[in-house]
Every structure is written in structure tokens, then in C-alpha cells.
Image 1 (cartoon, helix red, strand yellow):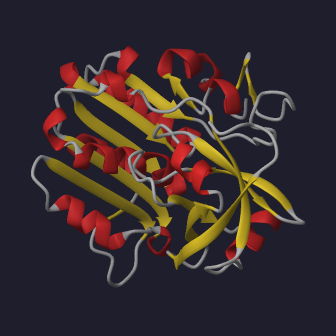
Image 2 (cartoon, rainbow, N blue to C red):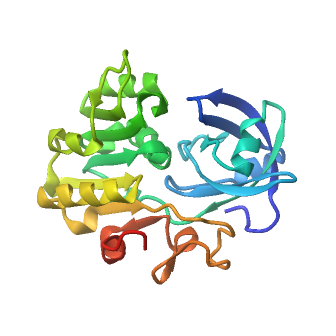
Length: 277
């Protein structure tokens, strides 16, 4: 982590409108030394600061070894994110981070990797996909299960199609509401769980998305024999300070920004049993 103090200035070097409400920003620190020093683990997040408006937490979607730029996928739904959506290449933002606890990459070596995501929950795990595919010989099968509400909400169509064509890679995608050209399943993402092919005895599962979906996915995976210690969730809460001081993201006795956002199943099972906790 660079530091948790004032934001470091960064320049937008690329912007892509992925869907009507989702866009990606590629950023580079203005200070070359800061860019060279920046390190993160998949699953961590940055705080992006829009000058004059405020800051928001955003998952990092890059591969850890991508040193030139830092990628973020953002949904425009609030004052700050709508302001970020108006940025163009050459515009400036502030960056603090990275923060939080990432995915357990050390436990994935030699295992099948199962990723279950809903909505923009794909953003916290896309760095894992990039990580696995660039180091393919270290891992078993890669299973990607993604669900969205509307067909137009799915971003990276071409990437999903390309991933599905790779060896030892299974891609399962569902939309609750499809479209005339929608090539995948129409229905709930939970419909796809039974189609996921992996070895439960030697697999690690990682999930992010609506909590109801994650609870259903966890029940399915555990019923199939996945060890409880190999199931991880990335939680989403109202993170504001990123260092566990403001209390907005308190989750039981933990703070999502500091102790998460990635938690092992045993750490959150009891809390997830209570809707709206």
C-alpha cells in the first residue's frame, strides 16, 4: 500500500463504456515512483477520489503484474460515481490504496478454481481470472459462473466467449431477463450451479454478489462436498474511510474495509443467516 493518507494524483489513460450504466477506467499515477511502487493482491480495492465531490471504494480488476496502468470497473449510481463517469482520458482523479484483504491465492495452487458472481460482482474476481489464465500450469479447472438481472448488464461479452473456448475452462452465464441475441441461459444464476463441473475435494470457491445468491451458492457447493475452509466471499458494505475508523462498514465484530472484503465462509456464515444484518 502506498499509504492511507491524502490521495495520490492519477491520470485517466483509457475509458470504456461497458454497458449503459457500467464503465471502466484505466489509471496511471502521475508520480512515476508511486506507479512503480504500487502493489496489490486480487480482491483488494482502491478509494477513488473525484476532486470536489468525494471518494468511493472500487475493486481493482487488473492482474497484479500489470504495472503500467490500474483498472477499475464502476457502476454509475451515485453522486461520485456519476461524476467519475464523466471523466475522459487526460482527466485527473485521486487514488488511495490498495486496501483490505484479498483472495487466498496461496491456497489455489493445484486446485480447481470456482468463481460465482452476480451483477457487478464480476469485478472483484476478474483479477483472479486474469491471474489464473496467465499462470495456467499452476491450477486445475477454472469454472466461471456469472449472473445478471438484465442481459444488457453483462459486461465483457467478448472476454466471456474467449474464456469459454480455452482448455479446462467452463463458463456459465445467466440473465434473469434475456434479449433477442442473448446466447446464454435465461433464468436465475442458481439454475447453473448443478452444471458446474469441478472436483469438490480439490477446489477453492470464491463468490461476490447479492448476499441471497451467495447463500444459495454456498449451500450448493457445501452440499457437493466442498470443504468449508475453501469457500470465500467478498462482502459489499458502505465503506467510507477504508481503514476501519468510521464504522460504516461494520459487519458483526469486523470491518469490511479492514478485515475484508474477502472473508472465509466460517467468518460470515452466522451473519449471513440473518437477512439484512
